[in-house]
Length: 188
Image 1 (spheres, rainbow, N blue to C red):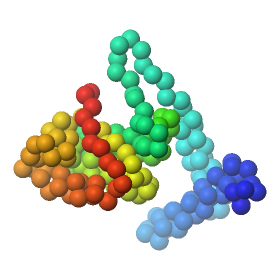
Image 2 (cartoon, helix red, strand yellow; image 1 turned 90 degrees about the vertical axis):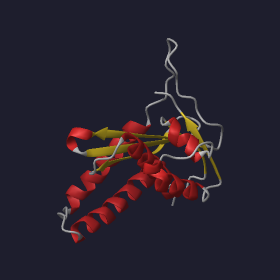
Image 3 (cartoon, rainbow, N blue to C red; image 1 turned 135 degrees about the vertical axis):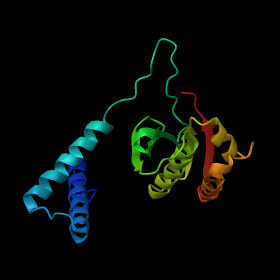
Image 4 (cartoon, rainbow, N blue to C red; image 1 turned 45 degrees about the vertical axis):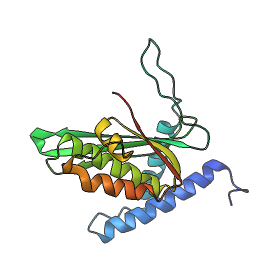
């Protein structure tokens, strides 16, 4: 099918199939079942939004500011970050995965409805980043985070803080399931 159809038609077919599957799961768990026309429109709108986001070229910054440096060929870069919203007693994590050309391969953000501290939020971001890499079958990557303490603990150059020992050791164990992983600190 891929050899006989235009790329855009294959994308639409896959997107509609995914939308049918997603809507079926939503309706089985108490959500609203969309009619055929609404489902088709929703899936094509979703595809258009994805394409609009993924077609943005990566442009280097100027004026001495640090700029994004791509990974080497056949590798990926995973950027993770955690944020704490103390007044709301919640945290959130975000993950971006890019290839050597700067194209967005995957992304994820999650709310965590728990009053986590900054170090725990960062540790959860690393955990989510590794899981996303696993879900996308990415095997060779550099994971970058802005917590020097956690990156050093993941590299085994210093012990992790007691509050995140289990998360750090779990992330290290998960990293052994990949072909090649580097952990790197990024200043923000």
